[in-house]
Amino acid sequence: MDFGTRLKQVRKARKMTQIQLAELLGVEQSAISNYENGLRMPGASTVVQLSSHLGVTVDELLIGVNRDGVEETFPGGNPNSIIDLKSHFLKDVLEGRELSALQNIVGDTVTGAVMAEIIHELIEPALRLTGDLWEAGELQEAEEHLISERLANLLSTMGNLTQKEPPRPYTALFVLPGAEEHAMALRMAAELFSLRGWKTLFVGRSVPVSGLANVVKDKSVDLIVMSLTMKGHVNSAALLIRAVDSFRREGLPLVLVGGEAFSGDDNTRSDLGADFYAQTLKDLGEMIPLYEREIDSIRQTSKL
Image 1: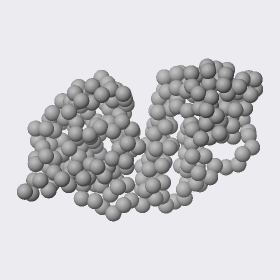
Image 2 (image 1 turned 45 degrees about the vertical axis):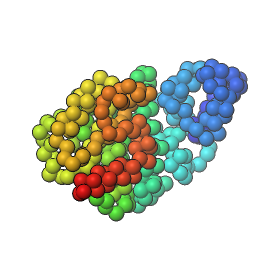
Image 3 (image 1 turned 30 degrees about the horizontal axis):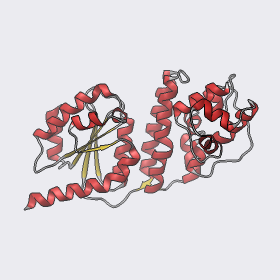
Image 4 (image 1 turned 135 degrees about the vertical axis):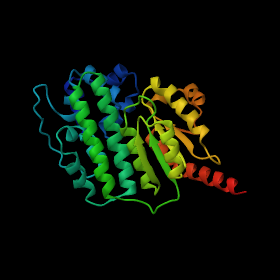
């Protein structure tokens, strides 16, 4: 049974209408209808609210496990698309069968478009949901770390199976500023650039500025990509961007920054001084051609 069917079943068992549930959540009745019909998947915070109002645990509502840890058995058959897999993907990850569940759908050869869908529809939402469930006390810290590690391995494995576009003449360097430790979003960003045919260099965190400058020069880096999940690390990013300004040559490399730290905060973005911002990975993927055009323009200008 998928999430929508389970939600509808629990709501009816509580003798509650869609309108009544929508009023409790402060949303339109159409939102509940969309959830139940599989047209939309609620965010993690909404799932927590739903479970509270319906008197069930998040596990019961999300993955069909009751309070005794026993899996419910439902009719409905096997998933046959990535969207079908989404409703119980986190459960697959916890049970260590995320790769087999995914390969049953996509096979052993993955196109770039399918890989992008895996990132946007499965891995990124699963990471966000994992963080919210951990904050709500529905996941133990060990489970949170286990999920993150398995998702990182899944990203790497599926990336190796993916047919990427022909190489393009651009190089991107991926780095975490300061004490930022959450590298998974940055790895997904690197994969999106790789799908496009870019050369990608992942250096992670704790890279001295002098070392970064050497890599930029030796590898002819066109774009530095930073990811921030916490506002407390914004100052570190600003310092790193100023350092990049000091060793730019002929306008390159440009700097792209994204992540949860910038959600709805235009002031933080304007104060930071980066060249580009991408709040979500989907935004980033759609904007890669824009970055290429800007780099081409700078290269052309430097030749004049």
